[in-house]
Image 1 (tube, rainbow, N blue to C red):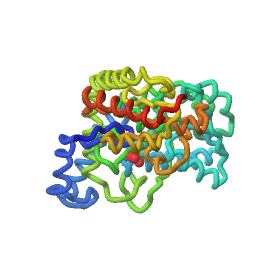
Image 2 (image 1 turned 30 degrees about the vertical axis):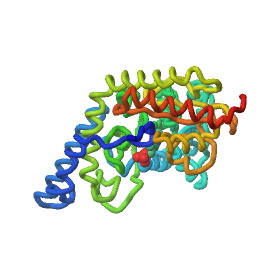
Image 3 (image 1 turned 45 degrees about the horizontal axis):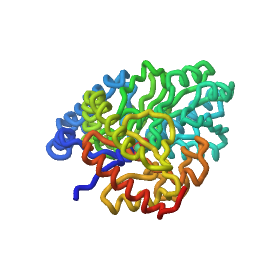
Image 4 (image 1 turned 45 degrees about the vertical axis):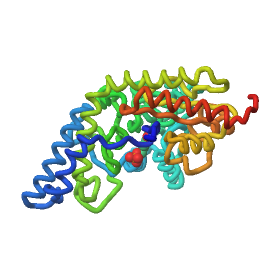
Length: 381
Ligand SMILES: *Cc1c(COP(=O)(O)O)cnc(C)c1O
């Protein structure tokens, strides 16, 4: 039986058309983009074109786009160097939303050990970071605010424009992890006004190991990775030309298909929910946001047992963030939304993709229903 993949928030398959655009840069045009010869110039040209394309699509200038090894590196860079840029202005406090990806949270923890004051912005029960909550925390010490655009476990969308405006009014830098938003909604850095935004290619059918950080012109940032003059001296290391080409092409293609895909995904999500609607003790975590994401609490069932059993039946999904699923810790996102540890341990994430079919969704829902009753072992709730 063909496996059913419902874990698109963890990663998406590489689009074949994108692979074809990347292939020449592994083989014929393999040159180092910094080499002073024709093959080097061909590679550099490809990187320049990719930067122009990605910049245009997110409404940035090419000089504001920096390629990285992925979302994690971009998040680390924004947090780490953003914090030190703020410190130079005498601001030592960083406000970080409690529902961030571990790439951001772990950066904040490191900064705390280096003497920064880290304050976590609590989330509301529906998964939102509210503007009034941020406003109550902002002060003259705040140098950096980090709130993700859309959450990777619940799909809840954050009011980034308003949050950013509040941070800017208080004289702080504003960074948003846009990794999970970008596959489903257009990114417009001018409209949102953010100082920094991170992206990852493999979340929108591009290659793994490639990401980007947008840094608004005029924001003085140091680099995180030293050792070369690549990326205008801010990110050392031989440019990953095939992946950079693939990232920009994947972003452009995905953006073009986004509206239609969103409609389809919303339909699949609704169908899946409808199929499970008759089950007792199934609740949605967080308000509706990204069309592809659904976080469900299955009362009385351990999420690790459910994910394991679904896997045996040919359905791939995860309990939450892939980066955290190896640990047995309950999701920090769900805890921040007020769920108990037990409730968080009963929650699973389904994330749909454009290649999923109605038949797959019906089949996955049937397997889920069967497992829900089996795993509860006839126990009443
Ligand atoms: C996947 C993800 C990341 C990490 O991106 P990588 O390219 O896998 O390092 C960061 N933030 C969010 C919200 C993500 O979903």
